[in-house]
Length: 268
Image (tube, rainbow, N blue to C red):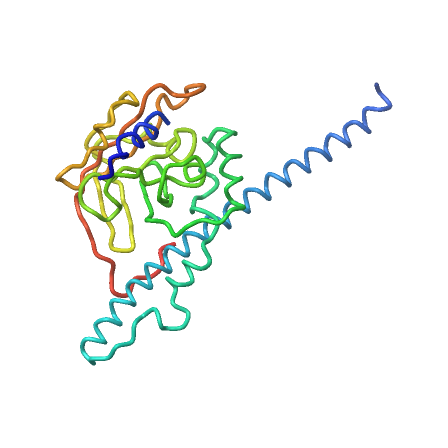
């Protein structure tokens, strides 16, 4: 662990009658324009979210095909690296870098207006290949996990906390998100419920074991652990006005791990 990890964790945890018809006509026209703009933004968000999700699924498929190639190479004693094959999806994913993490925009209904605007601002910029996909069925959450916890990343998705174990590794994996954005639904999560994390190297199922509220200075929740665990971090209270004074911590333990199938189909 880098020496600066604890300080970076602190930042994450710190986290008239004749004129009336004319007036009505103008008002209706303005309302129609506002609705059209809003609808356009929602369509843009949906398209952008789906693009990055498809790239991640293509990378998953490519990883499965790479394993098949390797088995064929061993049996035939041939040397044909997968990166030399034309149109390899991993190479396309790295080159295209779609502009979005995948969500159904209906889930933004609970987000604060400021967070929705911040998310929309990220749709015009390029991104990076996600580290994985985080899914919590009980709160209808499916979101990509991007590296880092800077403001741009957390407006766009949820972020892997620097200095903690990477998704797919053992130990304590830390993931942060905004309380008025993707992680709004964490307030409804209960002990015993399931969390799923999919990476290019496999799928992992976790079970919520503990929920606590801590001060931003209590970074021990992100310390390394021998057991494979997942720690989700967001600000608390969820509807606090201004900078929230505490942090909401979800701790989940690993219950099963599944390597990627050899012929995985893209998830919808």
